Image (tube, rainbow over all chains, first blue to last red; front, side, top):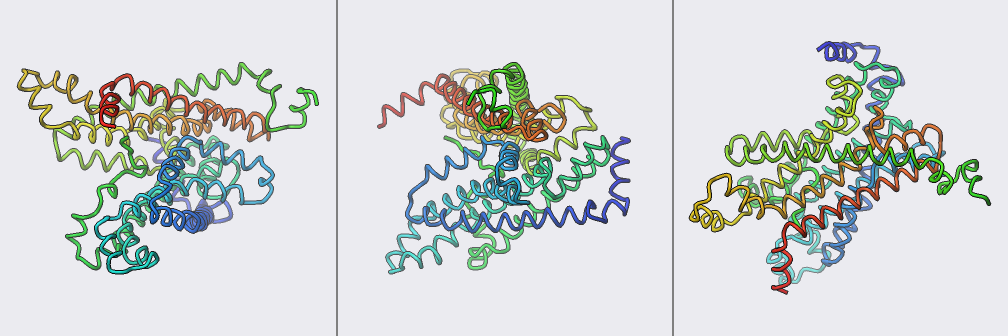
Length: 245
Length: 227
């Protein structure tokens, strides 16, 4: 295919990687946005989800927020925020949109992880006289870790995808290479940009899968084989967990 | 203030806009609906044999699930851009992208649904002389319906919302209006199209929920019986 060869040539051209419109600068913007927004949304969503999961209330809220997040188009929110009074404040509309769409997977997964931590273990810990705080730190969080990490991974991929869309209303990031390609009707550049964006998303997914496996506190304690057997099946669920109601 | 002024003062909510551009809104909504319907229908048609295949030959299951998960990771803007050279500027780009996304959840949920069919039900059907096809469509599929419909609802809702991104090549239904409104800073156009889009997702979800209730009357009865 001609376009594939041309896209490859585009990627192999050094001048496309340098400068303020170059790949390195756009990649830097993309990673910066992803990191900042993921950090903000974790700081907002995880404490709430863990607290709600600990007391076992608010399950309907967690599920409904995740459903609402699916129904509201990311693109619409990005544009609405741009046209709102916030639109004049540089990157803030993008950051707010990214945080809004990262929160649902974080909230839902962390809530399910903590509220469905093995009840017998939790009861035993309570019987040993652990306080609420100790229970969360030493029992519920380690048990919920795989699901919390699934939420973080989903949120990270979501942020990468949304940050790409933010290029449409004029935000920074790798999406700009695609939108610039469309404006120039330069299909090879569009394809090259898309390859970069897709690779970034896959790398981010891979990094978080690895992080989840390496950092899992239960793995260090009980060895590899037993965690593999005890890992909840939800861990293998797709990016957006399929709900069977 | 007269309604005509809201177009000039560029207000978020503008009745005059809805009145004067009714045709444009209807066209965009219809395009949105048919793109969504086509994507979900083709998605189902592809996902069903894939799920059957993955169930029949275990070695196929891993790659099928892995591949659909990888497809799901690709951001929508990149997905449509990658399909652009294959189909050129046409609705096929958007529909193919949306079909690929829908496979992730549909294949998984159809497989989960089929796996949840009790072995006794299968045995009983076989004992009654059901062939493999009749077993699949007469016994297994109806019992797998709740999981299938749950997957279908999730897929439909996210397809409605992802269709908007198709605006990048001019086939985004209501997304086209959002895109146009973004370029001309036309607040009423953006808000009206966004609200219609969310409404479309909610209506589709409710319709599917109703369909599920109709198709699985036993689920309702048993719930009433047990509580």
